[in-house]
Image (cartoon, rainbow, N blue to C red; front, side):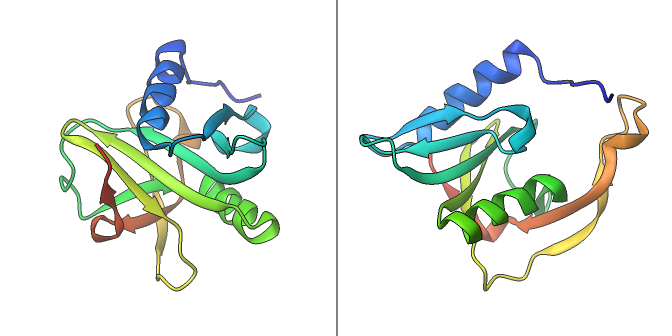
Length: 140
């Protein structure tokens, strides 16, 4: 079984970040690891509204031309959107703010290989999606 790198600090950061983008009356529920996506957002009647994948990155927004995310997580978010009519939001905190992308079927997204090399874990290099910076909105 693959090592899980997520720490308690990571979970606290995710919670803090997601709270910044919730609308009034919404609640973000942490989903289990098997769901591949971080949060299910529900309204006051506990009806699903969206799923959110949260990342915290070092540096400033625009450091790279786009933001990379695991294709596995990306495809899971799209599956939630298409099969359950939930919005799929990708939220990233950089040193200079929190930025959000709402998945849209009509946008062309680039797929490639990418990932981390600093942990000496071959499984960290995987298929990824590159979301253009111009498709993000600053939230905080």
